[in-house]
Image (cartoon, rainbow, N blue to C red):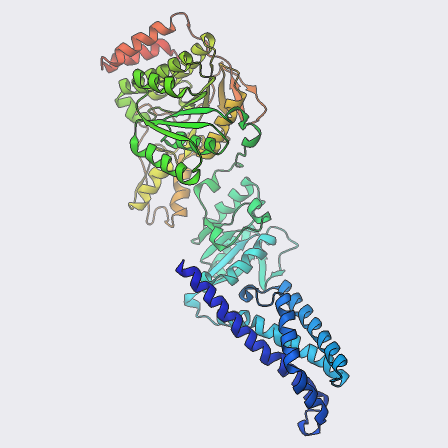
Length: 620
């Protein structure tokens, strides 16, 4: 509040100062024009002309100030003055000059005719000079600033984005010591040209050369329309320099004119994944959740909380967040209350293992749709505690599915994983059984049961990126299990938006499989993150290869060989063929699995899992 008052006071002071300056300049221009008319000989000026100036100066001043106000010459932020403001000044001065001629003609207080033209020219020059003086002084300061204080910037791209960006850099008071020294563009017709006085020096192949030549401190990628592949290729070249890497917002922000220096962000590892971002038109498919009561189990986790964020803004009747970890549940509850104060959000603490707690929730809130995201998912931890994986993942899913069936939930969407395919670890095998539970219940229930399977999500709890960042912050080393290990990656919002869309396609019994794009080497992710964090591999940061962890594979499969694929309306979502298994004795095996899980015998639990999932081949 105090800052707003101070800003308003500063603006008022500037306007008053500008008005006083204009009063002096516009009258000075008339007098100068009169002196010039008489060959700079003041003594030879006829007395009647001096009297006419004296008689009309007050009216002329007031009239000109009004004209300048109408043309908003006291409203612009002149530190950002551009060609548009220049046109405005010329138009205002021409109108003021014509008005002065008309006023003196009507009052009979005319000056020599040539004075009007000369005064108009002088006035235009004086107004432009006074308005653009801030920029002129700033340019001189920047040009003569001591080089040791200066941050040299190279911009990739010679399009309109760079033009806007350079203007923003120049005008920002926070970047007084920054200077754009070189521009890079692959278009040969642009090389050698200048943008705002800065030369387009070469194409991407010369980035490293000119980064050294101009002693560049920072490179900004400014091609918002570039494909992900092009962006990745150029950024991979840039990260071989010691420069700090930054990137501007996407093309849509540029089209909306929203870009400013605060939007420029550091290049993140997600920029180097090498695939286009996934865009889902949720508005067109959100009808199935509108007006519904929705339960999200595991609603405080990384996937569950993002489900809550995306669902709550699409007109749902009520959102029920269910999680055993109170801190996560509290965080998402407070976030939704802050961002969507009108939303009906109920936050409940409890475990999917607790049947009576689930019964109470389903009976009292009667959810229409359930998103089941609650699960133990850390592979090495579940290898050490397989009984807990079964209790939470398998028995928990069984409990929630039973409640959904009993209370006639319309749709049940379970979050699965690529580790369920040909599982070599307990976590993946339990998720495979969960997929079987979904298909088992779908055949005997009026509820539409479906599962959605996808790979790793960047930034989720337990994913490698947060771990790498922690290790880098601690000084290293960064631990990678194997130099050849690969994984499929997707951002959390991408994965969740596809989960929601898959739910819209559901007819019951499907296992939806999300297209994760090309797999990524974890080793490359680690190296990129080290570089983007300002470190040099082998100099001040190391990678340590620790060997595959229990239950871990070099690569994950999204499909089993026998499953095949069916397409959906979204090319990023496919449907796997139903899993073939013994449904007649399936529930008996689940009962046995449950009893074994609570017996705490780890060898027996693995044997029970293998009975249900023949493709489970643990690495002993």
